[in-house]
Amino acid sequence: MTEDNDLGAIRERLASGELSDVGFDALLPPLTRARSSYTWTPIVVARRAAEHFARRGVSRVLDVGCGPGKFCIVAGLTRPALRFYGVEHSAALTRTALALTACLRLSNVEIRNGEALDAPWRGFDGFYFFNPFSADSRVGGPDLLRVADQLRGAARRTVVVTYHGLGGPIPSSYDLVSEERVGSGPLRVWQKNSRDGAWYHLDYSHGVSRVPRKYLDRKLGAQSSSKEVAGE
Image (cartoon, rainbow, N blue to C red):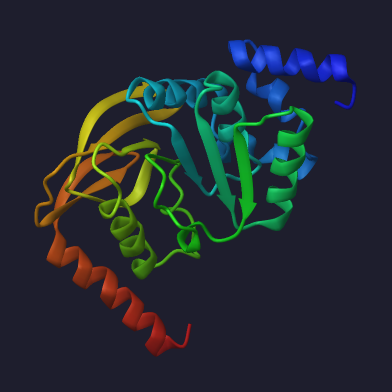
């Protein structure tokens, strides 16, 4: 991995889509590599998502919960004219992502350690989510509402791409403009328009549904209250 020729070949194969997920995983530490098949974005999905962002005129994409940076790295090499930013709460995964980004000399990818919900989302016109909330026990009802509020405050024409679902609510001001099966699950493209109704989209791996906004706000708020009573 330290040889310049090897790194150059990896860059070229990632940019062209010729490198396999197994090949990329070889760059990861063993414990991180072991989680790859079910946690990190497959290369074919990252490339497809990057194409959707580029096609819809997006310039700055935020990957919420970027792990070891696989999506940002692959997407950044696929579409070098776009800029990709990843935020990851795990310090170890952040170090891996930073090391890979530096070794592969990616000038259009930036990785930061921190909580994605605490980072400013304004200024981004694209967001990528690989089912970050449904399986993350650290995320509760108030956090899901914060995600919806952040997306609601985004500029018109903002694009959201989800793989295996967001795992929570998307404001009704977003339209589902594309859905296809890529890799092991659905890749959905949402775009913000000028309307905001009194309901949410619920975007999950198994499908999309609608729920009244007041009902979900009350339900997620009740989850927060019950945790406070329990002393969590």
